[in-house]
Image 1 (cartoon, one colour):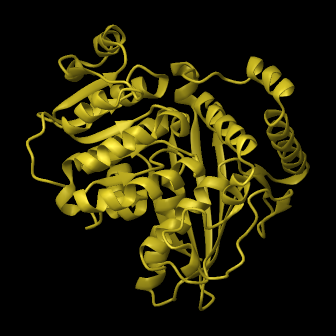
Image 2 (cartoon, rainbow, N blue to C red):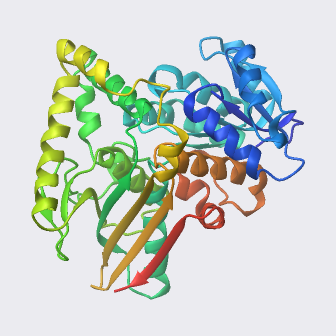
Length: 409
């Protein structure tokens, strides 16, 4: 990034939204003294309200007005800070001008997107510019896709250290307790609407290498399906489709390709949701599979989508503090290497994964960009959590109470 004087070390854009408020609160309780942070959004009055409710460390933070439909305000915003963390979604609707402003200004950027089409567009428009300016553009810095991305990175590192070769077959089984994010639902809706407007986008969404930096260079390894039927793992756990698999898997594969396929040219990576054991686990797996298929079908049809909008969480809303505190997530990632050795990674944490835990993940990712630049991988452009932040982010998340472990099996 160009050596220019910036007024702020870190700006939280979208600070008046539900997750933006959680992020601001987390930072106010964990940021080192002297870090220059600002809150940004469309309404100064609402920003003042958010700031007044923060812990003491955040009550003197600067307030900045910016609107994603106003290019001049975004240029000023990006130029004022070394790092910008944005929670303003759906990113396909509001995010590209923000990424472009940061790429041009040489400003590091982090978001919470789970949208394949948005990330692909951001790569195509901004990767080359960001590499020239030195900006690290880091997508997927929340529950999707930090646990997936960092766990696979740690598995590949352990296999290399043991001389076990690259990763071959990797499967993540996710279990969690938490509310379903209104923002995630809105992102799913936005992608479905985009495909309805342009059916050719469906091929991009279903391409397992949709986010590859060089699609033609990808191996012809057959990847696991995203929408899998109920099944049992070798140790008896029932599984169902994982709603985030279609995005997380593509982030992990992009990480592999950005590092010259350091995880393995024959990597097969898939994700499922764990539903338990025995008859209850089997019944839950069947219900989840049917419910997810029905919801996606209903969201693709205007009359039924209107009915769903009445019952599903709205964008910008979320569970109360007590419910967020009761949440948790755990991901078990089993891997077999090219020479047949097996490893298991576990990633987990407390707090509702889509809200409380995500605020921790995005907060620590943003702080790593702002404060740990000399320890980060020497990369710029459109990156992933593993390729932009790597071991530094693992260390930060462990210190924040999250678990990242790898064991040989």
